[in-house]
Length: 370
Image (cartoon, rainbow, N blue to C red; front, side, top):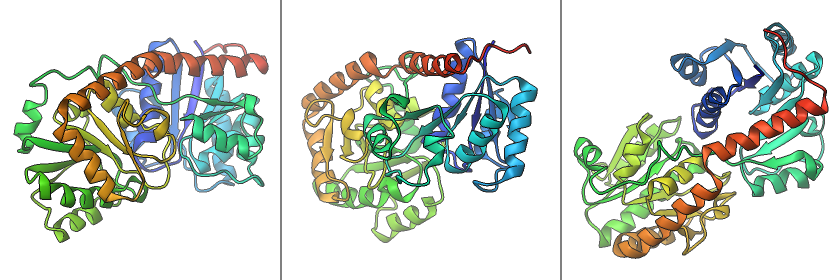
């Protein structure tokens, strides 16, 4: 059995970390061994343990934490790791150096659409055999930073099409009753951070409720800015119109309760897995034209695209979805077909495994005895 070590220095639990956990489970189903390394107190580490995934506690205090480098290198050798896969800034450095010390191939995933500087980016040019990006836009940014194009591969997050099945009438009734939702539910699934545009969603809801007084906003997720957004909702007089669920494990059921899925990202975005999950579930989508979102949201075909930072345009597009259910359903059908054709979890994992095998073959890495 081949073994991959995923490193993650982030202490958050958003789309990036959840994607890594899901891919770890899917890799195990494909016959791979998976080991996760994260700092003490990491929510991702706790989730990994809850789900029965093999995990190791490794403090990672900074990009040049030599103690972390040695700890990871020892872990790689002791466990017979075949390939190392890094995900965030700090662990890309320490994990990359550890892999080099241990003589193992290493991949680095770039999850966000922030430009990569051309100088001093050894993480991309020296400490990774391949760069995985979560979309073509991000791939272009990495190539523009001087990484050879043949070493950069775009693999967006995959969606389990059985877990996120096409919703049928009545599927969302239990959640609507539980959360006391009305007949016009606009929902979003995103970690509460500045780049996710939650304030714009609040302003869009204020505008929308002038024409659709029963509209309510369902915000799924958690994060450091949640308390701030809750206060902003109260300040706008929207406390009774916005439902904050916190982190939930039943995202398919929550999506089924939505009449429109809205993603208002403002600065950086790959191809968001929550967006693809909404596609798979048949929820009509409105999203901002930022990062990799336009790769999948084709305006008027698979959803509606609006400029980032424009709550008025966001409100108008959402109102259009609620007013024209037939048109919204037609776009949702096209979106589901897109996910089936290009973004299933089986296709995503098959591409990832092929990259692992490619870098292992290039370095002559054979499966190790365990």
